[in-house]
Image (tube, rainbow, N blue to C red; front, top):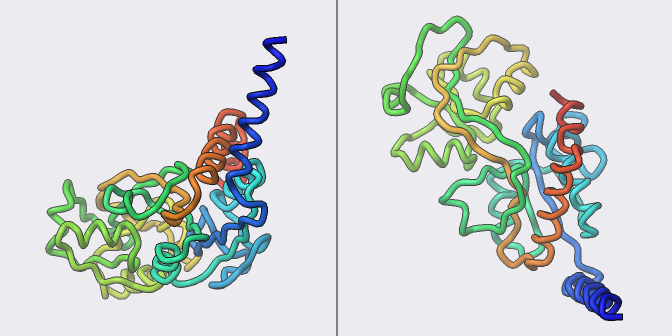
Length: 248
């Protein structure tokens, strides 16, 4: 009888916790073209729902499904705009957002969804090699506006030549408008390949980073906890590995 009583209390507690989120609650989830993690099916700068693919897009879909949280998914451009939009609106979230100590207090976080590396790339055939970021100060560095890589460089006193689209840096690099491209691996080489360019030289790998779902600070903790639990379960049961095999 006591076991039954405890079980009933547990069920009531779970039901109460889930009830902490209104039935009509819905998150507006935003993303951008950041292949192979999130991208429009047709490569354009706007897409919605099933017209968005990629490693993290698939992870996020399954995560929300398991968590029982209603959402809409939209891909927009540029990153700078949607990043600031999520900071301002209580019912919005954003991925794939690189976690940094500077960003930590700005959002609530679910993840990591995936891991990446930050690199400086030179044109194919370049013999340039650097051992530290400090050695790069003498070079013109292209980056992606308001991206974590660009923010990191600016925080170190660099003045990167920022572009609204990261793939613009491919042509800038080949035309000599910049000396190095600061980007994310494997995103940079993937974008370059889409532009018909391969064999870019990795001059320096200067940071390892993790990609998260970043939620507005006003997001209910119950929503954050449900999503994180769903993601943890996906890692445990092999779902994440299955998604990765579809793209890499």
